[in-house]
Amino acid sequence: MTAHTDLPPHPRSTLVQTLGLIAFLVAWVLLYRQLIPISDWLVSLLPVDRHSHTGEALAFFFYDVPKVLMLLALIVFAMGVVRSFFSAERTRALLSGKAEGAGNVMAAGLGVVTPFCSCSAVPLFIGFVSAGVPLGVTFSFLIAAPMVNEIALALLFGLLGWKVALTYMGFGLALAVIAGWIIGRLKLEHWLQDWVRQIHAGAAVETLNQSLTWPDRYAAGVEAVRDIFGKVWKWVVLGIAIGALIHGYVPADLMVRIMGADAWWSVPAAVVLGIPMYTNAAGVIPIVEALLGKGAALGTTLAFMMSVIALSLPEMIILRKVLTARLIAVFVGVVGSGILCVGFLFNLLF
Amino acid sequence: MTIDVKVYGPGCKRCDTTAQMVTDAAAKLGAEVSVEKITDYAAIAMAGVVSTPGVSMNGKLVHSGGLPDAAALEGWLRNA
Image (cartoon, rainbow over the protein chains, first blue to last red):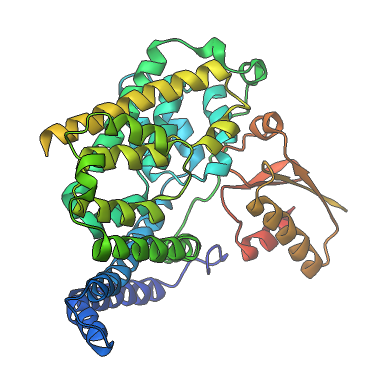
């Protein structure tokens, strides 16, 4: 990373870097469009019949792994650049004292673009609440931030298409807004742990991470790719490998009875099953995609994904430090019911 | 004069890395530092740190959120 030199960057270096980025994007698009021939060629090199079970599974694997990894790299880079314009401090300043309603909508939107790591969920929660961000608005942020993340969006886009990705994003945001608003209406401030209510944090520090140049922001994008990609690629490969096995070997209608739209109990079962699972989206979505091909209903699978990502046991244990058990129960109840609605609605619509 | 550095974070891996980066940068510059890790959530919030890890030098918050840049870290140490 070349960030934070004392001299302003040479204008030409900004231009050179921007041109380099454009050249890279063009190369990316060209390669992306050649993925099907490349994967067919790779499979043809192997001593298996293209139309056998093994051939099907391999073709799926060789096409999906590069496709998803390429999309992931691009979307994570773009998000890294976008996030360099935001900081948790600035988001807090924007949200403090906001009325509910508009505040919930803003918080959900900012939850997507504000840099956030689950290990700072607690300091962030305290920081928000103590700076006068209403509890419900804080929850809208905390629900949207993990649920609508670039990894989930990249995988949904790559494996299930932009319509499903956008729908997931839309319903994820709506869920964050509504669940946060309901929690706000319930006036549960007195259910915070006592010591949290007594804290009055210092004013937000706004001088941080300012005056970034475009090369700095590109560098932030590259840094995000290196960080997230390094953590996630093995899960993507593993998930797609399992997905490929399901594609090749599982009978086509197996999932109809278990996860089909007619089995009404499958949506709540999917939500409950998702809570203790703390796999990241990268591993779950390829498997989910394969199950969809075998007759699982979209609503049921979406509900499962949302539950895995938004309602995780480890996160609740962390939040237990600031929230009372009752407040956590309300949080799980409200978000869980929201996910149920999304699941049933989708099964009805698609 | 010893620079009083505090690293704010609940004890995740990034926080440890950040503390190590401070020690390394100080050793490189030959600056004397005392590095203290603040892991108490209340203390983190009181310091105005919203995203961890956060770093303060002589009581002034210089960084928060993610690993600091090594070059920037040296700059802060020089100015502290």
